[in-house]
Length: 535
Image (spheres, rainbow, N blue to C red):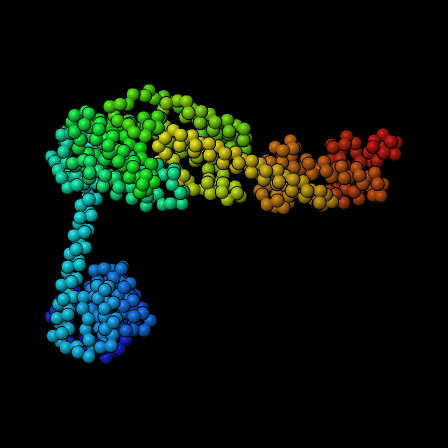
């Protein structure tokens, strides 16, 4: 049953249209009515009717504006426009936006309305059929891509009697085929450009180029990185023809990419393989070439031309633990040394790409754990707080030089963060010292000073001792005793008066503290002053 919405600002017209037909007998149901364009827009989005009978001239939003808006968002909904004789200029616009018919209100009769409704139902069927056909076609492409991805990345040849069709609709020729790995380099692009959009354009370009060069092929994404593609394609058996085809495809692709997307392309092509059973070997060689590309950075590689590389361990076991220890100590020299060591190993040892990816992920996670919340600098705090984005970026670095550039940036950001943390620490300590000077005649506690500089007592105690080699309380008592000596020299106050003036609860504790710092009791110090024994 077709759902119908009636839209008109005149209640009599709405009632008249409702009563003119037996809607159920015409396999239709009126789901609602609306009195203006805006109300109709809201109800269309909520109900998604199949057919809309709509007045052209309405308040709030005209029928033409409504038609234009809905035809963009819901192209399968069919409009029949209701008009007065003087609205024929508007009718032309309505037909432009794919209204299927128009009815003159003053001439509405049951047979006229039924005829228009029949045309609207046929139009809805046609539009829906086209939409379904497009959907099925697109889904078919998605399924084919997933099938080929499954075959190539996790080969199960025993379960397949026939390979899926290729992307150009031909049976895939497994008698002679290769796999090509393409990597997109966006480094020449404006950093503000959307790499996802560029990748979509580049994928379309690769697909068009493959159509021209390979009799059958399948194109798919090995991951969701928006920077790499795999082409599985039929090829000539003869080695010279195979090499010539690969070189020609790469040259044409690079030229087209440079002109259209300005994306640089690197390409690795495995050797020519035969039969579905060899798919696993083809895959293994291709991904070995990805590691070879990581180390050599040759933009064009053929499987028949690569020289095997002996890969070694980076020998950096435990580096994350050592880095974490240095970070907690805010030891910039040691942190730089550890990160320099990592970069040196990456630079000088041939290793598998996954080893470098794992190392960078570990190092970043370790540093971010310390700094992601504690750095006031917006640039640094953003760098250390966007872990998910950064780890994704690390995962899609394809060359040794990219890894080295990234490590250099991590090193600089880490040292900057440590220097900023140390500067903040000095600032806290200096503020705490100033607090002591300003409140020397009061009782001073660690908590009071920590509250004043807005950090925890434990942290203030720790950074104070690291900088001055004495506890905060010892420093307070030392300052008070120096001030007490000054007051005794002035000879204006009695010892107990000085004691209370400096915030001591009793003279006994004051005397004990004074002797610990000066070697004399306050009375002995006073007598020594009289005898010129102290200054």
